[in-house]
Length: 210
Ligand code: ADP
Ligand code: MG
Ligand code: MG
Image (cartoon, rainbow, N blue to C red; front, side):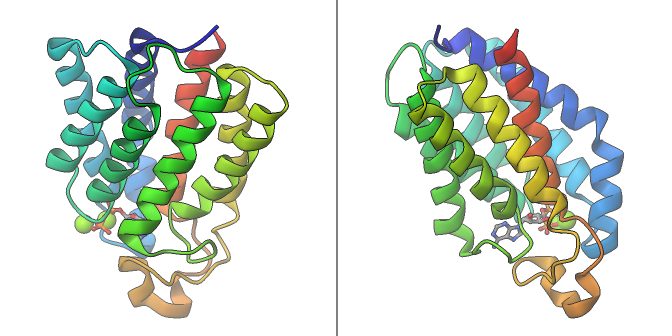
């Protein structure tokens, strides 16, 4: 069973709900090593995404992802807006105009999204950014897809790996983004963008499971 445009919209609603629920936590994480706006930025962006997909009703998964990208780019702001926007835009391009996403296509879309973030932000793994959540997610998704798993399982292993990756940013010293201005003092806190990436992936995986 593949993911249709409707499934992707349901997944985005779930992501928006989880971001709203964790808004204060993301603000707190960003207050420690940034400027305390990540929760607000993401909540504003995902609310706008939900409002937009409800009215525009895009017909393919790729069209939903592309619309999400445009809305995130124009509403989130900060460093994370263009980065998440690019991720969704590249994911949209990777799935092209297929009507249902299977396991390998989901894995491919995740990889394309991560490559977009890296192309735009030039962060490597270990730099204490969202890439530290995305990279293990992409690898886990690839293995699951190669083992013949469908989209639900591919997404759930990706989400689990993203959570581990986000958790593992805690001791790291930031080398990209605002947190890097703190140097050694950025160690001891989870990166807010890595945390939001993990939350969004698990929200998406939850809906794919049901
Ligand atoms: P800002 O830092 O402009 O206030 P946000 O607070 O919304 O933007 O987002 C901060 C997050 O963006 C960081 O926690 C980090 O995960 C991510 N980020 C910042 N710069 C980069 C980069 N160059 N590459 C990848 N991710 C980045
Ligand atoms: Mg910030
Ligand atoms: Mg900011």
